[in-house]
Length: 149
Image 1 (cartoon, rainbow, N blue to C red):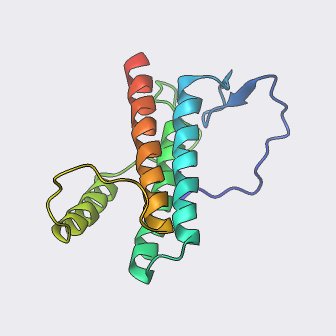
Image 2: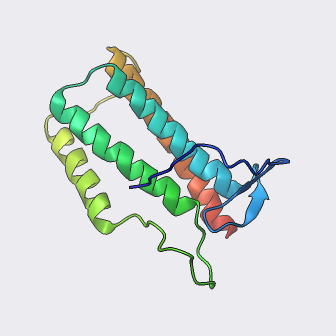
């Protein structure tokens, strides 16, 4: 899990920001856009939490939100031949397997889909649809970053 003691750097920016390895890049850099999108997705999941889901679902969402912090931390430290100042967080296979398990369990309770589902139904459902669409955009951004590097 990522821990910070402040949310600003006091280094000014001039349109630039620092990556986790200290390198400065423009705020329009694909990497910044990628982990900014992950941050946005995490915020949308915060809206789901504010709508008071069941205790079990809230526990899973909290777990997922912490995993998304790890994803953002992973994205902010690019691979390099230089030795890192500290061991970067990396998404683990166990995190992926846990998410896949939750998805499979949820799908077992659903009727087979025969058409698209209109977003809405409840505040939680609407926020989850929002999270789904943000996640799709974030995935594209991460793939674009990977293709660029």
